[in-house]
Amino acid sequence: MNCQNCKTITEEGYSLCATCELRFAGTLLRLARDVTPLHDSLDATLHPGGHSPTRIQTATPPTPIRLDVLDLIDMLDATARELWHRLDGIDALDWRKDKRNEDLMATLIACAGHPKLTTVADAGLYMHVINDLARKVDTVLDPPEQRREIGNCELCETMLTAGAADQWVTCPVCGREQRAQTVKLRRLKTLCWDDSERGSAADISKAFAVSGLKVSRKTITTWEQRGKLPRHADGYAYCDVYRLLIGPDLTKSVR
Image (cartoon, rainbow, N blue to C red; front, side, top):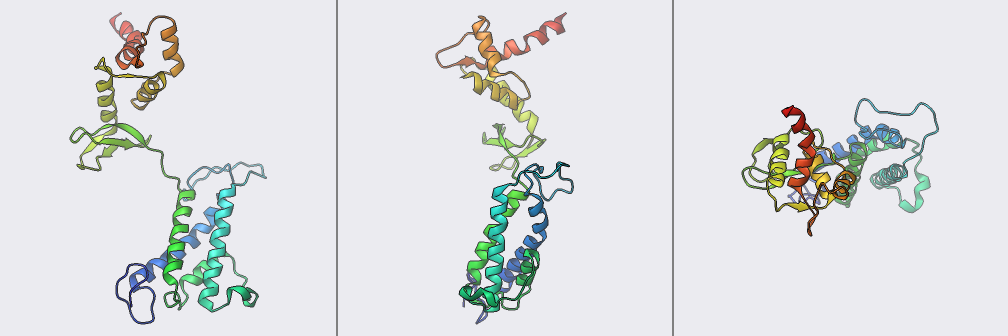
């Protein structure tokens, strides 16, 4: 008989192999640990990062409730209780026979330690459902950091991405590790030292912001209106905006 998850051969009468059984039970226990921070995340004023030891909450209740988190908790609770009924042999249409009154955390722990966890015929199905819920819980508690393009790899020209606080980046293609600020400045140099590089006011403002130079879209259009910045058919030249941006600093340094 093959494992319903990894397709390896397992013992007769078991729907999951020993390795997948440990993973399944571990995921259930991890979800039990996440129940408390998940309930804390119902507060819409909570700072992202439910696993963080310090979370920001307002002192005056009541606070707005995040309906997406509430739906996720309800889905997790319904799935955990359905799994327990399945393991305990209780008919889904006759759920009143279940005399247990444990909360969600206790139900998840009970499922993880149930002796029939891997012997039910559809254990693999429940494992996939629980894994999917675990991924959603992780996304709620620890939102993925927003990453944006910062420039090309020096070795293979692959576009690199980094978060706001990243100091080093590693190319996913060639594996070269580079300082994030160096990549940003190299991209800025490529844009500003080539007269053919053009873009809209918004594109230029965004590209400069990534490199640490602040210039708003409104400032660029104002320069055009005052006759300081020429506008071409395909937009503004990065080099022209760069000269105007650093011009005052150059004047001060000469003085």
